[in-house]
Image (cartoon, rainbow, N blue to C red; front, side):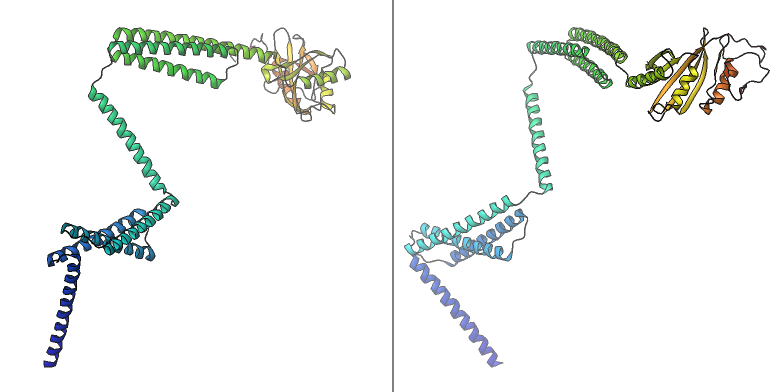
Length: 441
C-alpha cells in the first residue's frame, strides 16, 4: 500500500510540474507579446476557438446537406482541415484584436504568419467554391425539382396578380362616364369590324361550295356571336346603362337574325350549285354504257334500242330500253358475249303505268364488274314478251309472279302459272284498274 501511494504521489507531482511549466510557458509567450494573460482570458480564447470549430463543422454539414450528397472521406478530411485552418485564423485574429486593444503591436513574424494563414484559408475557400459551382453546373435537376420550380413560379404569378387586384381595389378607381362612353365606342367599332369581316367571309363562301363541316362551323360561330352579344348586353345592363343595354340587345338580335338569314341563303345557294354540278358532271359509268350500246348496235342492229341513259336516281346504273321485237336478242347478247357476259340476273318485275306495261330486268357482269338495267315497254291490253328462262333460270319465278299479279304473258316459259293466287282468281291485283270480283274477300 505504501509503495502504491508513493507512486500516485509521484505521478500527481509530475502532472503538477507539467501544468506549472505549461503555465509558465504561456505567461512567457504572453509577456513577449507585451501583455500578461489572465486565466479568464485563456478561458475566453478556448471558448472562442471551440465556438469557431463548431460553426465551421455546422457550415460544412449544411453545405453537404444542400448539395444532397454524402461527402467522401477525402472531402471530409479536407473540410476538417479547412475548419481547423479557419479556427486557427479566427483565434489568431481574436488574439491580434485583444493585443491591439491592450496597446500591443504584433511582431512582423506574427503578421507574416497571419498573412500566410489568411492566404491558405482564401485558397481553400476558392477551391471549395469552384468545386461546388462545377458540381451544380454538372448536375441535372430532378423532375421533382422542376415541378417545385414550376409550382413556385405559378404561386409567384398568382401572388403578383392578387396583389395587383388588391391595389386596384384599394385605390377604389371607378371608371368615369367618359371612359364608359369610350368603351362603348370601342365595342361598337369592334362589332362593325366583325360584321364587315363576316360579310366578306359570306361573299367568299357564296363563290365556293360549303361542306357539312363548314356549315356546322358557321352555326357554332353564330351561336358564339349570339352568346357574346347577350353577355355584353347583360354586362352593360349591370353597369347601370339600362337604355343603352336595351338598344344594344335589340341591335344584337337584329344582327343575329341577319346572320341567320345570310347563312341560310348561302347554304341554299351552295345546295343548288351542288345539284347543278352533279347533274352536269359526267357519270363514271358512261364509258361502259357506250361500250354496251356499241356492241348491241353492232350485233343486233341500229334500231334495236329505243333509248339508253345513266339513271342518276339509282346509283348511276346504265339503263337501256329495248324494242319489244329485239328484247330477247339483246338479252341473249348480254348473256353470252365474251366481253359483256352478264351472267347473273338479280331482279325481274313488271309495272303498270296505265298507258303501258313495263318489264324491268337487272343484270350483273362479273367480267365487267358492272350492273345494267334492261327495260321493255309492252301493250297494256295484250302484254306478251319472250321468256328469259332459257337464258337465266333465275327468271322463272319472277316471271310467274308478273303473270299472276299483272297478267303479262311470257312466251315459251317452261311452266307459267299462278304462284300466289288460285287458278280461279278473277283479275290481276297489281293493275291500276283492278276491281275485286268479290268485295267481301
